Length: 168
Image (cartoon, rainbow, N blue to C red; front, side, top):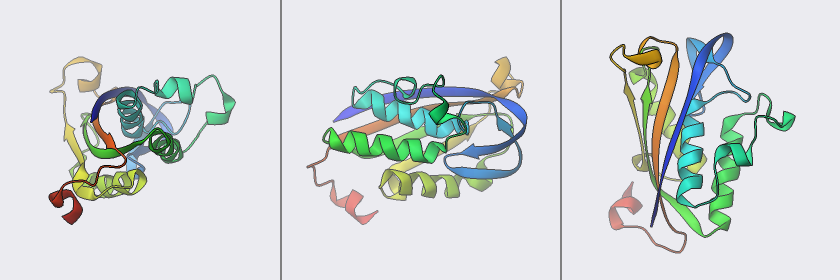
């Protein structure tokens, strides 16, 4: 098994849509970024790449490359999942914490988990997404943006999984 840690943060920017985990959050200010600024998927990508020792999101999709301008982060995640599979790994589980004062995430968590699970090719029970505030401390707590911490567990692709995973 391999474990990877990912982190990302983006500031809010008026006039952009907010995408978290591949889900558009209605009536919310979006995030500034070269791609669609899906901070959750970016942190998951870094966790996956870190676990597989394959670099980081910036080495695969640099913001200096116009190819990735306004890119759909779900497509970037699909490419990373294919790359880790080619390296002999599969996703065991993902645990992510989204830190923001706004918007409230509870109404969107189930849709985000389902979308991430589909993109990762795993069951919903293998994807945990939690929303937390920063209790108004620092820039994230002041509502300037969103930060995400993500942990990924990779297993050898040949592993059959546990009986409980097969039922999920």
